[in-house]
Length: 286
Image (cartoon, helix red, strand yellow):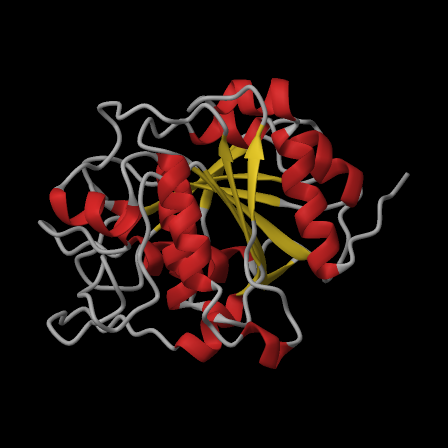
């Protein structure tokens, strides 16, 4: 890593229950800067995987990350919360912005590279969580970069990339018409432990839900139907070859499409870290 990749920062770096803000330049010429928030626990476990929490379209990265701090402290884990601004990364959920060509997946890779020089966690092994638009980003990043993701928890995604070559990306994984060098390997995707969650009342076709005839016919009319369909489609991948189970759908009781309600009514944060702990054998610090 070159010296120019070292981030500028604002705020405390460890053990204060506060997030610090950082910004680094892109390694790709002409690409926008990479901005993110970081939490470092009081006791930071060297070599532990790094938690990555991805915001929805409200871009409230800090609000989401703060909800993870207590569990991060429990396990001694650092938390990275990328900030994908609307101006720079309009369609960050799809990894590639259709208008600008900005690559949000490459932005996250730059952040991880920078953090490898800052923290004791292993930034090449990530525990990935996303809610709503963040869940869209999370499953697509895990499909495109499966070697980096040790656990992926997807909560309330609006729609999904189907694991099929018969549909062009981002509807499926056919990238022949795409010049952005994204590629997908179904066998490699089947090495990622995926966990899918959605509120049992998340049935509304609200303004933030992507709606089109193509998506409705392929995936369903609401987030519960779409999550159910994606889990069934993923079950056909060769998970058994890796001695792994395909993703299962968990309905969050008494919850619609609301992150705070999911945390406070359905213990979303604890559910997320329970998935992480099971996948990588995390040990509580007490």
